[in-house]
Length: 362
Image (tube, rainbow, N blue to C red; front, side, top):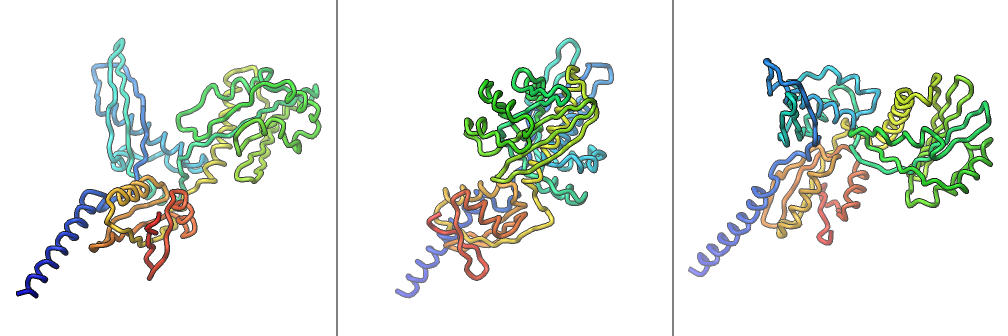
C-alpha cells in the first residue's frame, strides 16, 4: 500500500509538471514566426465618384505599403525585380491590417492604413528573386556637406550652401538614415577654407569632436565648369569607406534639380547602410536551444526577443519535459553572429550534446 501511495504521489507530481509545461507552451509561442514587418500611416486619397470602390482603394494602400517596405529593406539595384509583384501576391503576404482613419473632405476620400507583412513570406519572396534584404535599422550619422567651386576657388558651407539648407527638407518615410548637420561655427569654416586644397585628406576632427556620434559622412561636392564630382567619406565601425561619384551639370539654384541631386546622393548612402545590415537568407542555421521552464517571465522575455529579432527566420517548441523547453530556431547567419546578437541581449549559452543551453544566470 505504501508503494502504491508513493506511486500515486509521483504521478500527481508528474502531472503537475506536465500541466506547467503545457501552460508554458499554450500561453506562449508554441509555434511562432519571427515578427512581422509593419508599415504604418499609409495614406491614400481619391475622388469620390460614381464608380467608387473602397476595396480597390484598400488594395492601393496595400501596394503602397509593400513598396514602402521594399524601399526600406532592399538596395536600389534590386528594387526593379519586385516592380511587377501582383496585388494578389501582396495580399497573400499580409498578416494583419487596420484602418486607422477614413474621412470625406470636399468629395475626396482619405484613408489611413497600418499594414503588417508576414516576415517569413517576404523573405521567401526576396530569396526567390535572388535578393538579399537588409535589416530595417534606423541610424544617425553626423553629416558634413562642403561645396567647392573650383572655378573661383571658393568654399561654401552652412547657410551659404544650398546643400546644407536643403538636405533635410524632403526626407522620405522609408529612409533609414537620419542626418545630423553641424551647427554653424566661424572657426570651423575658417579651418576648412584653409584646407581647401587638401579637403579629401583633411580629417575634419575640429567639427567631428564636438558631437557625441561615432559615425559620420563627409561629403565634398567639387564643381568645375559643367562637371560635378562628389567625394564621400563614410566612417562606420572605425573604418573609412570612400566613394567618388560624377554627375552632369546641376543647377543648384533650381529647387527641383537640387532635390533630385540630393535624392540621388541619399540613395547611395542608404544603399551603403543596407549593405552593412544584409540578411543572408540563403544561410539557415538550425539551432536547438534549451531553457529552464520554471520561470514563465523569463520564458516570455526570451520568446519576445526571438520574435523581435530580424535575423530569426522562425522558431518553435519541439519538445518539453518537467524541467526544460526545447526550441528549434532557424537563424539567418553564422553561429558566431547568433552568439553576438544574443550577447547584446545579455544571453549566454553553452553547448551540451549539440543543444545550446541557456545559462541560468542570463
